[in-house]
Image (cartoon, rainbow, N blue to C red; front, top):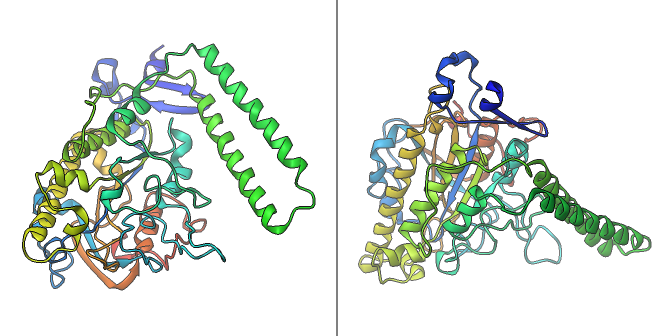
Length: 427
């Protein structure tokens, strides 16, 4: 019984409860505590930043740097974050697509005869590595305010192995229930439903195999893609079966209010990110953040697109206000990550690799993507300002993070258009 109170097992998966003094965690030595898992979080926004006031002074690099006006709300975390300049995605050519290729670095014209293609995003590479340990391999948070937020095509920040968009959870209430609300359907009925889905999949696969002979090359490729989608569904069904009888974790937060938008939405989504990581419901999260509703919640009457094409005056003031509030919200998230203690006495922040930024710098400029890194999960060198050579692949940063999280460099030599790791970030 004592063991069961500390560990729940389901199909070979170990789920550790949070450190609870009342059930005796304090009686174990630190040496006996399981090592806290690594986590990865990407926070992306569209329309870029205010070029003149968000980026730190390029003449002050390394540990001898000063926060810019747009980053000043992060002052209490300066020693625990790194700002990277000089990075871009080589093939990016759409000024209003702030997140479509942000985590993939893909060439949209990679497939002959097609005007759009994408590849796997960095978060999904991590999810394939960590996903078997948690109920959800990854969680994609989104906002319904996509059109006014400068994101571009996609259903979230995430793209799967085939370069197909991964759907996101579009508001805090939906995300809360997905993460923490148990299905009230009786277990036997849920088992029967899963069995029925498997039966349907088996029938579909048999039908598809019958038409394999004599297909053209194009049709064969389409069928291969179809088979892969079926395999993806089978994987998800297997995951559902694995966790079917395990109750969902209970967070230290209440159900969010309906109708949250802008600043309040981002705050609560950040709360959900912490709760999801704290309960080990997932170890990989992305959040495609709103910009349009954020401006509205701040009382700004400038349209988001117009704001991004600023000049001195109301538009620039709106852009700078947006930067400051986004930094303020990020500082609050880092506060929470530092406040959560792991079983070994370290903080949740110590085991999270967090990246914050956009695929666009400002206006229509796609070079020098705003990039801020925080958290100790990838063992990066924090507390510094890096100015890398112009047009360094942004995917070099993602590759460095993935390696730092423990992914085998021999199996993951590249990501997107990467050319190697960023040595200045390696701890």
